Length: 196
Image (cartoon, rainbow, N blue to C red; front, top):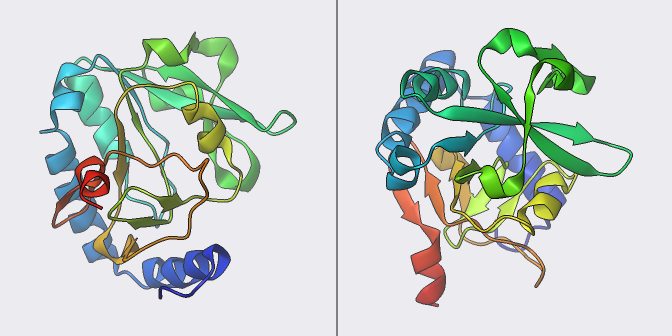
């Protein structure tokens, strides 16, 4: 898979994800959630940024419910397509979300609190393909790449094992994540980059 461009990698991994059985999907998501909740940056952080997942992404709805149970402030993204920018809003329940384009759920700004980047303790960054150095292929909008330029805290991604490849082509401006949690392992990307 190494000599494949980003578009092709995204397509191949999407096909793998779409073939996952329901049982494997939910069991793997549960294992990822269990591991995530043990992470120091999640235990110590008060405000956690996370997306509302759409299958076949790792299920985040149960993670969000666990974060609420642990008295965390959960903030989710709202995209502004005209400016190609993104903001985070705190939600207390799923009724504060609305369906926008492509069945994506986003916070309703009128009933939620806007939260600035400096108030967020940890961001869980989505993606389709990842390598062990923390480089990722997202959904192509570039929203997170732009947002992360102003964020200095820990970056975690959640992925199934089938989303991890040996290496991803990246540009000097691409911002890698620090840690990936899969159903079977914890990948310390920041440390892997130091060893290269």
